[in-house]
Length: 114
Length: 111
Image (cartoon, rainbow over all chains, first blue to last red; front, side, top):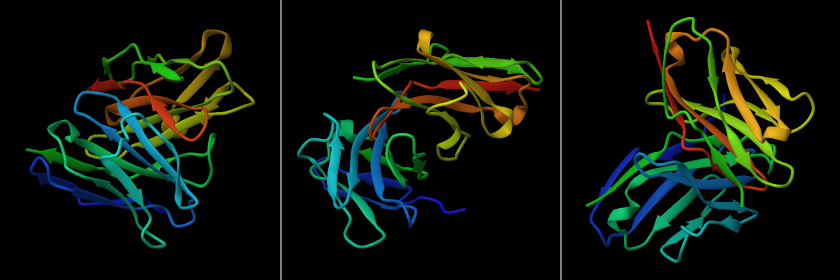
């Protein structure tokens, strides 16, 4: 069964550094998402991406964050100038459509900002 | 804005006990409802979903959920839990392109 994959599984970085989290969505999916889960808190939506542009973003997704689909398979989340509070598990997801379509999640990248 | 409440944060059951996890959502329009499960060390997986039709939906591994529109609820049930059901369970609602999750319920099944 096709899966969403994410790299790296763990990332440790210094405050102020830039990180890029990578995702390979399921190949025939058209919608891509990033979510995050701060330890002990709920999974929160960050951004959705369709047709090479952001379709929706949350308040969390400020200018510090950006997403890109640099080629036909990868979907990346860039965090510029990381802060301590960016430490979280970041999940990528993809779906064939919106609304009732199932979003399939990757295993996550655990980001620790020191 | 849509929101989801899961009132049971941590549930401990013995094997073969029945399970019901509560989920209430807040949204005025048409919603699509999901239950996801996260087994230890694994990623979020879909258990079941509801978007229309029969309000009683069946999912994988013997789970089912009932959509009660008047109560804004979508409770998850299983008649007899197994030790392998130990996991975290998340209710979520999608009214557009994003999923809004509840805080999750940690289920621990003891032998």
